[in-house]
Structure formats: structure tokens, C-alpha cells
Image: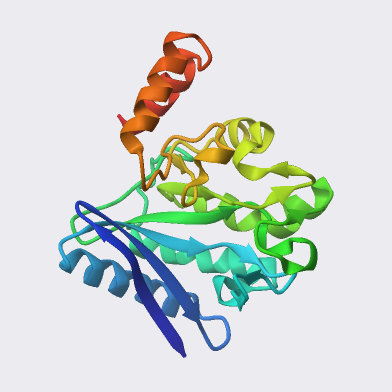
Length: 244
């Protein structure tokens, strides 16, 4: 069994954690134990992290900068990827029985916020090329690539990270239909929708934008867009409401 939790970025007060699991067979209880252990160890480090969960359903060998990143997929079987979402219940804690669907839940000082990524279909790109286009019909999207996200949301996942890749010719960071309408409204996700690293150039209905450089410039530009009514206040209200 391979179990690896790699700290990708530590910059107080937040850290990004990449969690990669390779399990023999299907053992949901073992998955939950690993989730509990990971949450405890990460919090013991004194950081407030987002723990990344890969919901890729591998349909093509993905190549990124010449490196095969198939390890970012739990399986080529959507059912196994769906089962792996049980780890959320121990990373974040068991959600209360009266919890509303889609509302994030992190239960206690020994738990961490989980992030489901990369939304959606990034492991089905043409020729497996990173950031390439995934061409698929609605039935295939909902039955192959979407189940992991749906089951993460009903288990209270805190954040969803959007993919660099495209879906049927539209960059996911700019996919209003899937992010604003489907993820937020149809699936009723009430947590944070965040960009991937430097995803600002592909921006749409995201709450947190990963701007590692020139963040003050970004704030000024966004403020100017709001003042000039290029960005509606409803977008700001949606983002602030999710934080509150």
C-alpha cells in the first residue's frame, strides 16, 4: 500500500496538501482511518490547510511537463472514485444529521478542510495532454466524471478546485454553465469554488482566486471592475456570503 501526504505549499496561515492514496482492493474503512490520521498529523503541524482530493476518473494517461500524472487518479472506475469520497468524513468530520445539503462542515480542531479537484473531466482530455480539451456528451460527463464531486458535496466538502482543462471547447475556469449553474445551483454547493494555480487568466464564477503574485494589483482591478459595473455586486455578495 502506498500512502503519501505531500505538503505542496506552506505559507502561513494556510497550506495546500496533496493527498495521494493507492489501496489494495476496496476498503472504505481503511480509507476513513487514513483520513483521520492525515487530518490529525496535518493539524499537529499548526497549519490551517486545504487537503486536496483527486476526483479524476482516468480515461487517458495525462502528461504534464513530460511527466505522467496518472497518480492523481484513484481509478478509471467512477464507482471506486465515488467510494473514495468517504475519506472526507474523517478529514473534515462526520456531518450532522440535520446538516443542509451542500453546506461545508469541518468538525473540530483535529480536522481539516478538504478540496475536491479538478472540476471537471480533466482526466479525459484528448491524447491525455494536460490542460487539453475533454470531448464528451452530457450522459458521459454525469456518469463518468461527475459522481465523485456529487458525493463529495453531500458529504460536506469545503472547497472545489476548477480544472485548467477545457470541456467541449470551453475552458473550465470560464464555464459559467457548469460552475455557476450546475455546481452552485443544481448541486447546491455552498462552499468555496477556487481557481487552480494562477487560474486568474481563465476566471469566471470563482470565490477564491489563486493569485500567487501581484495579488494587490488583482484587488485593485477587481474593485475598478465593480465600480464600473463590469462585475456585478451580486458576484461579490455571493462570494462574501459563502465566507460568512
